[in-house]
Structure formats: C-alpha cells, structure tokens
Length: 431
Ligand SMILES: [Zn+2]
Image 1 (cartoon, rainbow, N blue to C red):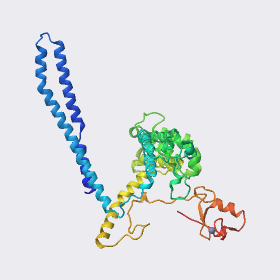
Image 2 (cartoon, helix red, strand yellow):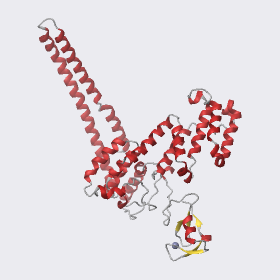
Image 3 (tube, rainbow, N blue to C red):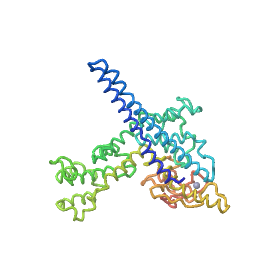
Image 4 (cartoon, protein in one colour):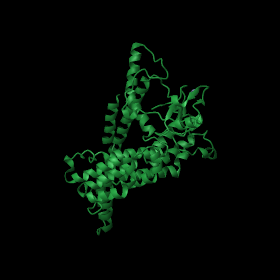
C-alpha cells in the first residue's frame, strides 16, 4: 500500500463518510413530526388525529430507514479507512531495519514535542487537553514543587550540547501550560494575523519594544518592517486599500519616513537614499530602476517569516516547530531508507554502521541546519561580534572569553587542556 493509495483513501473517506446526510434526514423527520403536531393541535374535527397519525407511519418509517442507511455508509467508510491505515503502516514497519521503536523509552520527549508544537501553532485548547490527557500516564513524574525550578520552556536550555538528554526535559508537561508562554504565543498570532491583513503596525510596535535584543542578534527586522510600511503607503490607496488622505500615498510615505527613519540613518543610509530616490519616479515606478525595490508581492510573507523567526528566537525557540521539521524530514527521507533496506535484503547485505546512514538523504536547503555555538566558558551563544574562535589545540571558545582568559598576555593556557595558546594564532570559525 503506497502513500499515494492512502491519500486516495483519505479523499474517499472525506467524500463518503459524511454525517451531514444523516443530519439532513433527521431534520426531515423532525419537520414531518412538527407538521403533524401542528395539524392535530389546530384540527377542528375529532377524527383528524387518527388520520394524521396513520398518514405519518409510512414517511416516518422511510425516514428512519434512510437515516440508518446514511449511518451505515459512514461506518463502512470509517472501517475501510481503518483497514487501509493499518495496512499502510504495517508494511512500512516491516521494511525498516529495526522493528523496535527507538523512541519507545522517550515517550515524554515525544509528548513534549507534540504539546510544544500545538502551542506554537496557537492551538492552546488542544494543547491543554493533550497535556492533561498524557499527564497521568507518567507516574514517575516528580512532584510539582520539584519541577518548579524546571518551569523553563526554553528548548535551548540545555546549552550548546546538541543532544538533549531526558534529564534536561521536565517530565511534568504542566509547565507548558503556563499562562506566560501561552500569552506570548497568542501575541505572536495576533501580530501574524495583522501582517496577513497587510497591517504592519503591531509588528513594528513589537520590534521597537524589543529593539535592544533584536539589535544584539544583528537583526534588521524593525527596519525591514518600516521600509515595507513606507513602500506600502507609497503605493497609495488604489493598491493598499487604505483611505486616501495626507497619511497615504507618496505624501503619507514621506511623512512616515520623516517620523520613523531617523534612527536608521546610521545603519541603513544607502537603502533610505534608494527609497527617497524613487519618489522622482513615482508616476511611473514600474519602468523605473526602482522597480525591484518596490515589488512587494512576496514582502509580507517574507517579513512574517522573519518576524516569526525573531519572535521565537527571543523565546529561545527555533523558528520552525521541531516536530514539523522532524516529521517532514522523516517522511522525505523514509522512501530512501525503505529502498536501501529492500535492496540490502535482496542482495543479502546487512546494515553494519549503527550510527550513520549508508546513503545520502536529499533534504531541501531549509532543512539543513548550521549548528549554533555556545561558549563552554561564558555559556553564551556566539554572535557576529562575539564569534567562536578555535585555539591551536583545537578547543573552541567565544572571542570575549578568549580575551578575558588571556588577561592581556600574549600566550595563555587553554582552559580545557594543557595546551599553550596565543591570541594571535586563534582563528575565527564560521559554522
Ligand atoms: Zn585546548
């Protein structure tokens, strides 16, 4: 059973297992009964009651039969789909090199990933129900007081170590139900939905409020948003649908630039000059050299993606839901794996390398990640101004830590080995 077949079965299920037909039949029955009731209540002649009830018998029986047929159809479709679902997954399982589930012992990691995913998607009620339902299964969960200091929801809380061990993850998922986390995500969703409606102002307000953190990360988000707001106004009422007036069109854009571009001048002078240069061409932008700057067909999607990335990163989370990435990468790579193992079986060869794949798994660029570097001395994540530096002994520290340890001397001892190193020979590394 292929996935394609399964997709077809899902469509079949959606088209045949419709309870709406049953609901319609129930409504018809109710109408029949109500009409009969009305007739009896308003009847002037005594024999009307008997006649009405007799007349009712056949239609009611037919209605109930139709209802049963509807429900049987739904049950049959559900059963059929259940069968194809079982068939599809049993097949996949049988073809994998291992029949055991490597995540079996890490159920709470998976539960946590699912809960976190739901929260990130803004599905707060579903997340809350999910957490409540998985919670009692974890009998070894520590008492609430023991988990209080663990209430952090920071996915990167385990520091630079890429391997998150069970010990890093609070078994008690109720920490994820924290109001603070939910309200953060609900802020994110309200800003994103404004962006979808081409309203940049809430996002700009957020970027401004978090200006210091964003700048420390080298983010241009606030400028990108303000620049788009300028272009959006510049395009005028016929494109942006905002009411015409002094605040819209070219005059509105100019006023916006005067009020908002001041503090960007140092970092983004060139781009600001470009934007103001375009004013000369405003009657005929489409054929001007500024055409590409003012083409904003994808701009709102792009700023929404950067906004999500920055927002999540300030929360200590990755921009994409790890569960989404893992599931997508897994389903992209799985066919290769199945192919490899079936060829291996046919040729009688065995999978010998335990920790690496014997073939390439072609994943899209967006799923290839750079590692982040956290300095083992300062425990800080590296930035553009504080990059990771490799010492001659091979150990890596953040630049600031390096300078601190050297204390102005030309040579110093590596904090992790007896190696004698010099600042001069340390090299910046790009991850
Ligand atoms: Zn060393």
